[in-house]
Image (tube, rainbow, N blue to C red; front, side, top):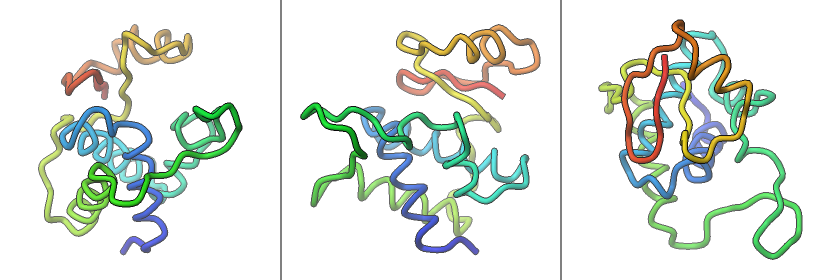
Length: 139
């Protein structure tokens, strides 16, 4: 069973990582997190908060020029969708992984991590599974 704190952390990660990709984009990122948790035998929170896992989950420069963390505004539609996605996956209601068991993803047009390109994109060990919105997913 997943705690409400872990559910909120999971939903926040979806919102931060993929709210611009719509419902299906957030759902795909949620499945990557679930896949990592299952394969790596780690909790959802450990997967999300692990070093170098999700850049949106570390302190960043905000639009107003300060450093901090971005949170959904009251009544945000994508936040509500992210919460629904997490509940559906966590409780087995959504059991159809649209990423074909992907463990990684990126917007290849904007990604800047040399490590990601060298170790995931160029690797035969991590084949591409699907493109959803602007994100390309890899096993």
